[in-house]
Length: 166
Ligand code: FE
Ligand code: FE
Image (cartoon, rainbow, N blue to C red; front, side, top):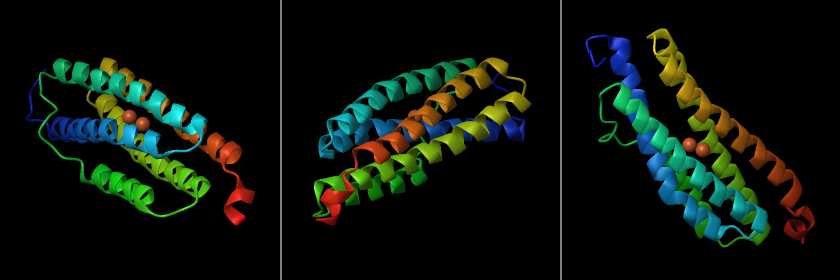
């Protein structure tokens, strides 16, 4: 399965390595975001997504096995930048509600990056004739989409605008 002469195959492996690095960076960042959040619901959402993210890494490991390739050794610079932006929010001297609002925004940027990355890799896996891999990528894509929607709902329900205005 590991004929790396096909340029699209090489591209797919590169995309999977990028996602593998991104997910592992997220695993390191989410506990800090949970700690920095004030709303218990938001803390819980970050903690649950941490567990989900660990399962997503396991899924990528499974994909790597199917392709007989290691997915380590690449650094996702896009995710590095997004996480750095989230860290800046935690360092600012802001009202708790504003910090929560900022953390949700930062987390949604992370989800959107993942949604773009998984959507692309899924399509390339389909084109290359790897339906099992495409299905695994679609599962993670669905989870990232659900997380994004949950974050939007949290932004609408927990952010106390009055408190921020005061
Ligand atoms: Fe993820
Ligand atoms: Fe995610």
